[in-house]
Length: 328
Length: 125
Image 1 (cartoon, each protein chain N blue to C red):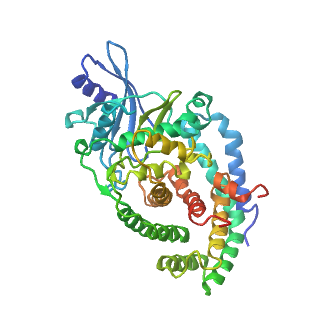
Image 2 (cartoon, chains in turn orange, yellow):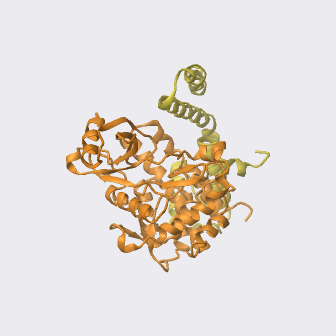
């Protein structure tokens, strides 16, 4: 069914294309629909990905940058030589595919546990923390005047927003209260410089190959803010997938991350990174609560969503390890 | 008093059936969903086994910490409010120990294989 719309669409903008094959919905994108398909072309099949808004999805609309912005950001990153897919087409009403865009498919792995365990990535793994530092520095250097319109968020606003989200869940959690106080007491205020912030840069949102990072995905939480936010989020324990002594996505050390970042001529503020790691841990915990709420109130009454609700406690132990370590 | 088998035994029998008899028959996304389903049943079994004991210990600690009586839900609400108001913090004797004990009891049900939890349990845990 979707192949009919895609076939008509590609014939309008991809010279020589005669149709599409192999359309399949991919799991993994939490709040937007992602499809893979191949464009049938005399020069050989062209791997492509469709990102579009599913109907009736209510994922924190105030925080989402929107698919139009996501397409522009990916294209800006691609043009700057950063690992990012090339955007091939932004959907228009005649496509009859909803809103979104079509991009080049980058081959590789996104499943964090495979990247951390499989032999295929063994040579890449020790390089990844440093490489991620370099990529983040590149993203933070993208010229702001060429970016789409994005919301602007600093530490103080984020604390207030998370507190509001948490209170709206009506889900009293003493550890979250403690973390909120810790964050308010240590609010670093506005950062010296405001840059593009990816907002969800972590193991799981990167396409990795034997040669390292091939593409940065999922720009939907992009905004303008403190660049240290991305460095803190990539270190949140939930994205280490069991490799808890390697803070950067289970790949390597903060020192490697910082060295890669500073090698490109940007400065790291480790205290701010720690602040954003605590903030990020709380943020994931509150997101787990949001999953629980959506599971209860529908429309997504899935087992997976229900079980993510039960992952809030992992953020509680990680928050305690950060703000009240035992034996301190 | 209800008859037996107990809810724990019943739930466990379903989880074992799915794990041993159905898993080999299923692949792809359904296999992933089956694993989630089995994980849910295992979690329910752990909760049914542990909840009464851990809740009783939590209420004991909360009574001592807050100097009042109530259900585990009521007392958690009061503790959350007092932390929010700054009346109780990490300098309050017993708070850190209470939060750690409560959180460890939750992980024992939710995710006993979570790496931070296993680390905090220590080698003897």
